[in-house]
Image (cartoon, rainbow, N blue to C red; front, top):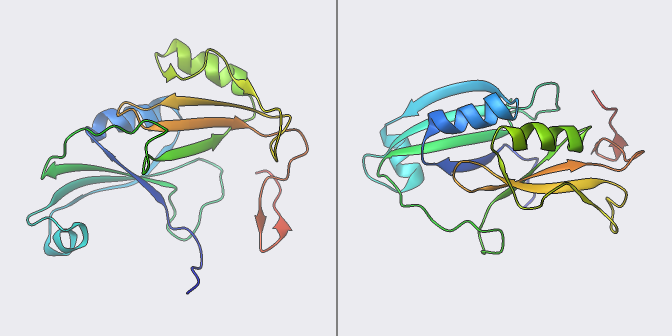
Length: 169
């Protein structure tokens, strides 16, 4: 079996409106589409009878996006409500999503001033590995999901498709 690509990443959140304020208002993502899913298809998909979900699809402005036209899906279970779980970064199954930035120090200051919780007191210099020379820092969303900001080292290719390097947008 071989997959053709990645459709999106998805986080289950406790309050969709609060998460939209965070991801769109603070992080600058765009709301691509929003919908309620309360139908037989959704119940079969998620395995809960009478499932009722609020769903938002977000994308990063001016970033490459695949066929789904969004990067991140946020889902709030209206029914059945879930219980908060420990999503600490060392827990198996805990999600983690990394965002790319051109100026991690300025973005860190802006988000810290807005009350965003970080795991380090400042961006951390990457001292070894493929991203040596860059900077990174972990931070938390309103549901304590770990996010990462990464400023790649100078000269690092922006990305590639089938081995062909992409230019930064």
